[in-house]
Length: 139
Image (cartoon, rainbow, N blue to C red; front, side, top):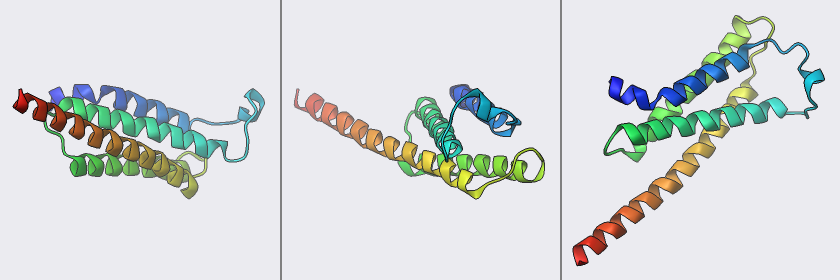
């Protein structure tokens, strides 16, 4: 378990950063930089895209034979629970923030982008592996 957990350390650290940034007060954020309507949704999308990619990276490096469906299920469930938890905390606990379903939608859209990239790269890796095995059998 600890062996597998060390590969998830970047995703755990990123999750802590995301948690802190999503739950800190945003009193004067408009004065610090100019942003546009929906900028926070773009930030959520980026946060969760990186989180999902880091979780996939940890899964790929921690197991010798990874499976597409189980990896997808794990990443989607973990990120959905994490995003839902953040929104629930913003809604009920942190009174200076408000929970928003659109934030959760943006979170899952970022995860969907990471899943799409993972599927493309997973298929490419399978193709390269099968091609290498074919050439090794011929030689």
